[in-house]
Every structure is written in C-alpha cells, then in structure tokens.
Image (tube, rainbow over all chains, first blue to last red; front, top):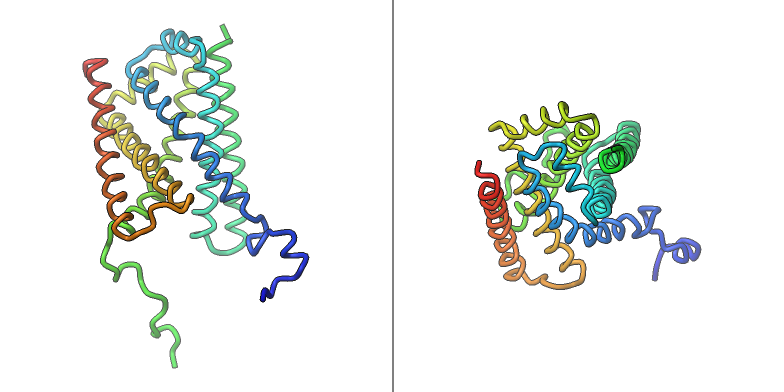
Length: 126
Length: 130
C-alpha cells in the first residue's frame, strides 16, 4: 500500500518534485559526451602550440564547427546538472542554496553561449 | 544531557578507504575539476576570437610548466570521469553489480585512465616534439 495520494502517483514526480528528468538528462548528455569527448581529445592534441591562423583553418574544416558546438552544448548541460547535485548535497540553508543554483545555471548558459559565439566569430568572422 | 557530545552519524574519516568509495568520491572531484577546465576552455576560445595576440598569450601560458601541469591534470580527470562514467552507465542499465565485478571494473577504470592519459601525452609530444 502506498501513502502517496492518487494525484501524486499519477503525476509521478516523487519527493524531488521533478521526477526523473534531471537523472535522465544527465545520462543522455553523458552518452552523447562519450564520442564527442574522444573526438575533442583527439582534436586538442593537434592544438598544441598552434597559432590562430592554423586554428582558424582547422575550424573551417568540414564538421569542426558542428562537432565542437555539439561537444560544448552537451558539456555545459552535463556540467550544470552535475554541479547542481554537488550544490544540493553540500550547501545548506535555503537562501545560499538557491542563490548558488541560480549562479550555476546562469554561468553554464554564459559559458556555453560565449564559447559558441567565439567559434562562430573565428570561423566566419573573416 | 548535552546533545553535542553524543555520537552522531558515522564519520567518513573512520572508514577504511575502499576502491568503491574512493572511486566514487573521485568521480565527483574530477567532475568539479573538469568544470574549472571547462572555464579554461571558454577563456581559450574567447582569446582566439579576440585576436592573434591574445590567443598567443594563452597558448604561451599553456606551454609553461604550470600550464602543462594543469592540462595533464585535466587530461587524467577527463579520462577518469569518462571511463568511470561508462561504468556508471552500465550500472544504470542494471549490469555489473556483483562485488567482485565492481572491484574489478574499478581497477580497470583506474588503469585505463592512466594508460589513456600517458598515451595521449606521448602522442602529443611525438607530434610537436616538446
């Protein structure tokens, strides 16, 4: 027998109030990051000591902008989800916690978008 | 009775470190470390967008011994988090829960993260020659 109300059971959101969406998103981004990270590491090795002209040329190769963008979006989404759990676990006091959770979300959005803008500027800025 | 002197929940410090618990906390530590690395990646990309001088300054800093130490640390953290993350995904799929299995895959993760890290730095030095 469950002590949950019928409405609570139908909604299926549990005590977290958000159901399994956070957990699931973390796994989906993790799965996407497996091939993307391997590609990124392979690429980074080539960046060692590279000047800006060569980096621009690399970025203009087919697939570079697309794969780097996919990697950055998955990375910052995954980072935001992971840091959120760390904050929820270790930061006590509702005010501090909510404040840091907001900073975490804003920072992840800022980092993701600023790096995407940077890539577009380098690749297409001429 | 003074409640402050009563024993509370078991302290983490009194437990003997085990491969399972050490790798678990390392997953979190490397995750936070990689978030700092992601910040460096944002800086690196933005310095490239800013212009050749800014980009060269970033590249020169990354070539110093301290820059290389950071990159080496991030390389290992990335491979560790990647390998152990795959281990976690198998658990999520309901596989590999037996204790001998968990210990075995734990050591596989440690070993492969070290091999991949050294391997990519070996390739890196081979390509640019120091």
